[in-house]
Amino acid sequence: MASRCSSGATGPAALEKLPGSSIRVLRTVESVRRWRRPLLLDQRSVALVPTMGALHEGHLSLIRAAARANHHVVVSLYVNPAQFGVREDLASYPVTWDADAAALVRLDRELADDGHNLGRISAVFAPSTSEMYPAGFPGQEVDSKGSFVTITPLAELLEGRSRPTFFRGVATVCMKLFNIVQPERVYFGQKDVQQTVVIKTLVRDFMLPIEVVVEPTARAEDGLALSSRNVYLGTRRRRVATVLYRALQAAEAAYARGATDRAEILGAAHGLLNQVLAEQAALSAEERVLFGVDYVSLADPDTMEELPAVDPAKGGILSGAVKMLPVEAAQPGEDLGHSGGPAVRLIDNIILPPSRS
Image (cartoon, rainbow, N blue to C red; front, side, top):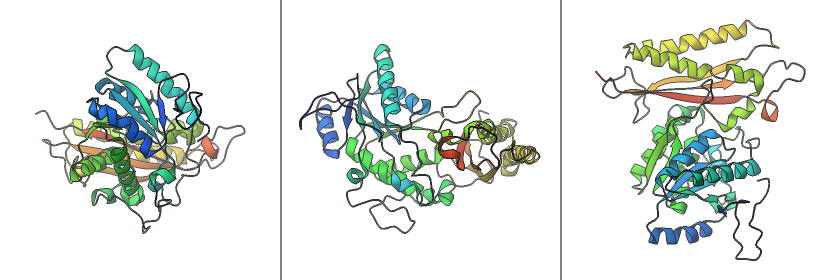
């Protein structure tokens, strides 16, 4: 992380806080447990919002929701190496401690001024990897040795096919965070819909006394789901990046018209994706944006298994992933995005509700 923020106190008993705020910065498991213990005795509710930093409005909306319903909110800021594959963007993942700290301080002041909130941001948990993984750096290979939590077959589907260690890393770090903070509620965004199903399954199967709260996807004005990885896009690819959401909207519209068959619903999505691909391919290398479609899915809302047709009484989940490829030929002075504009994998989803008829 870029810097350390403190209250100015010194000595072993010094309490580290975000500047200009009462928000504690906790860096060890023991410090969290010392902070948490009296709240349990006083029956004060604690919520956890897990993040990997690079905070955006989607994260802040989760914190607002947590503050409305809980006395204390803990925000974890930890880039978890175990959920990155060996060829993924761990080294270039944006680490923005100063900006994140400033955003949390501003938000906490906002929460203090809003009388509808039960609580505020009480603490940031910002551990090191050695603290989170005392046995050593977690393996990123599929066959790595180590202490992991696996949720199968759910974690092997969709995102799990393309990123076989991703949900293992997510489930493992979340189990650790849940055990450390012992929250009554945890908050996640719907954008990572398969992740929310994995977490709900983890909580159910391991009988954890935690309520999983899923908040709607936060979006930019043009519909792009907010993500820390959007900073990689640059100006040109950002204009085309809504293609996945628009494709899912086309499929959603087919369902709204009464379609339940998989081929008809997903055909609408693929039709839009193919149209945009053809339009971009017709442009010059200095103008076009190329992308690859990883998958478009119509799945059961409980298991993420693919559906041949939607049961109108149950609904379904539309989801997809596309990889925005690097710009082929940059124009002079063109904004290519963070780290020079590497390939960016975007995911999104839309929930198909049960029919009202």
